[in-house]
Image (tube, rainbow, N blue to C red; front, side, top):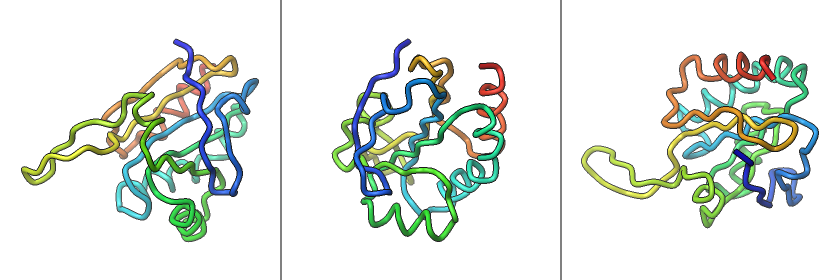
Length: 148
């Protein structure tokens, strides 16, 4: 299935499109919120595996609703070597089906369901993970990347 192209503002202050990465694999991951425990663990796991991901000719892009200012602080605090994109109106989250009704302590609200998409160099989604549990997730993603 072809990955849907989008353009969002990135933590480097530039607009970034998925199509900018044609010819490279992309690990596109959606996460609920900067600087929360699960999201920090996931981002740091991607950071810790970034050399393996680079060897696979791939880039990591993280997307949340957070502001660029929040992303910059999150990157600096955790020494993240990849871009985070801001989707404040959740349009890209909706395009990828990760903006969903969630329940927490009996309260219902709309939010991002933690999800990852592995996109090949021709911009096809070759694997997707939804309702991600952080533990061992990045290892699963890097194993799939090695198969490309």
